[in-house]
Image (cartoon, rainbow, N blue to C red):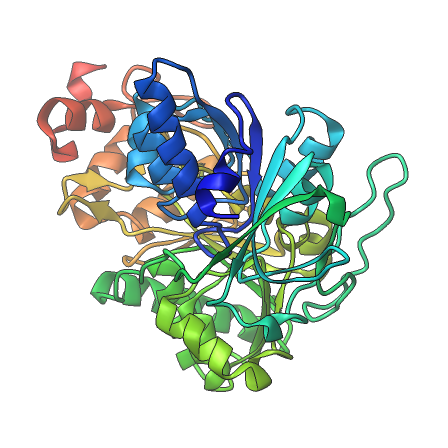
Length: 491
């Protein structure tokens, strides 16, 4: 079928599951056609909105396109599109945030309603219902099994020879769930493809479209320093015997800080060649693999630039036994994370002086992207590290505040906080000890005294002053500068 013909199979009020994880592996032609259909229906005065289940963020053809035409009934679990973000914060697109490892099982449990249609990008499809995904798996196996009908985008940009790089596995549901038999990052436990009843495949749309992912911001002095601080901390932990001499698998979040951290770890020869067990495999991983610094990477998607994707496909003989893509309920599974002993490294939007982390909301109210998989990894890590630049908007925003304006990860789960200023090891410390460590080591010099003074305002084990704890946020709302926070206004 054409994309337009396939879009006619999706009805108003349907729940649609999309393949992919980040823009990697996401369908593009059919969602764009659904957007055009929604516009046409709206011009006629008819309603047209769909519920959207995705692996994580998607390309603009899904999230941006459907947000702009007001076609979103609801959306979960993670996003990073500016137009969708505007719709969410304007309450035009109802959005509920989820830990990424939870979505597939919540769908199977029936908590979120049925899946009417699955739209899947594939590198190959066979007559007997074998779908070979492209460069991102996400929730594709589960939505294919649950959907009444499946639309396949057969994208010729992705070679059939990618078959074998996937490990498709769904755990049984309680009460019959057994252990997931992944004991090293390179263990394969499933199939090379998604197997479906071919009678459910309602359309195949042939495309030849590039991934919609762009490159990340290049490493700068701040992100490079954060990366070096992480690498040096891990080396010292090895020397102290708190990390085994053969090292441990690493999980790293998405973005420019994550790329900088991995680059610094690769450049530090005191860190042995290491393995990765993560969600997103980024450009830095591919570079480190070519340099012999990463020996294996298991993830949910190739969240790489288009040149890096082309390099993987042009050198499949080299990469195929070093890379593995899994569904997100396996890549992010708490059981496996705990078993493998992952060193997890994620980015904070905001931290407070007691070690709590805000990953999602600007000034506590505006959704940025979502919690993603950071909670899956942080809560179950061998050692959980959060990174952030100490300031933003020049120095008008301090990323470290008295109390986070939205609470995603509690101090119980955060082992280490690292900024370009330095390292705060929070393990085994009381709230006051954590506060002193963070202020001394991680806070920008402009805000050290301000935050130290805050500690004198309250009492108790965690000495918050409930009138003053958001003074920095109030100052920014009123003057666009947190430097102007004044404790005297609240005390």
